[in-house]
Image (cartoon, rainbow, N blue to C red):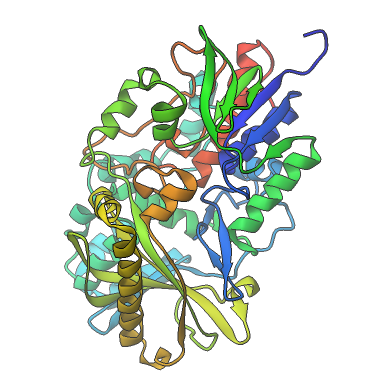
Length: 497
């Protein structure tokens, strides 16, 4: 193009889109991001109610350990720096049941000692659990380049650094957390195993999550989710990128096998040399492109809710006194809470007093999330506007009562700040079934892995958390980088960026 930089158009200003924009600029391209909302971040978002900040996303951020490949990506896109401060938290979560409690500490030996004291009859299984979590620390997300670009040397290196992790996958890769919990005799430990992630998740996912916290690779950046997204936006703009807000896309314009640009909802046409859509794949193939371009494995996932479920939540935030000093995340028994056709007898309370952004006038934010399934989404979707509003009000009251029943000292000292539902995620993020992550990895389904290149379109590269299950922030940020690397490879250029 006679020395003129080629232009990359990124659809979506979430974590994947911002990462794609930064790496496109770093690779020498022009980059423009088009975002339907007024702020960057997508689901990595927060907002204010009654002067309090509410965080939608980061319970922990995988990739905060310096020296890992993922940390280098977070640093490159501006999300983290060597000076980033993290919350002072020394545990994963606490589970309570029938007057007893147990904590999964970041110190695995402390956890093992506490679990055995609680349930000596489970000592053998407890030691096996801790051993596998220790091995799971080896499971680090590869972030230098997409695995479809790996050579023999890359696999050899992975084999050296992850030599014990295959043992975890062999034992826990094909069983659900619900099935795994039956190995324990203690009712409390059974609850603990199934508390944090939905029971249908593969058990290895839980091992990896806990290992991430235990090795110091799952910190919580001070300032919460929105500020991290804004840091990424700042990096993108400082590098010369352009981001356009309140710009919803109606379709991707194709000319033969070439995606020549995008058409906005107002009819404006924007042309570019490469297109990187980072939106949920149901939007990509239901609105922006024809379903004919959808990969077969993805079609299968959308057609089988049982093997490929999507998880969302009914969430509520409250303000309580900073004197509420419970563990940052604590699971409790509750009187059954009915939402649609599902009943819930457990819930958690997460305290946010570890960060000043969540504290005001001697009070702090606490939040909870009641897990919602695909069927629950259908229930929410069936409600009229009036029924929807009434149900939110009813459920928030019931949740408040259950919190104060568990913690009587909060009676008279708890104020509702906000509630949000699966429909909130659908409305703001076009999230399929209100999912805040991608398809759940279950024993019944094969993990979704998209290579980012669609058959029949030469210059379009897909990114976003839906390209690899179970999604989440690490998948989102690395997929943005990988999309640009695929562009570079198509031009026979170095992918080192």
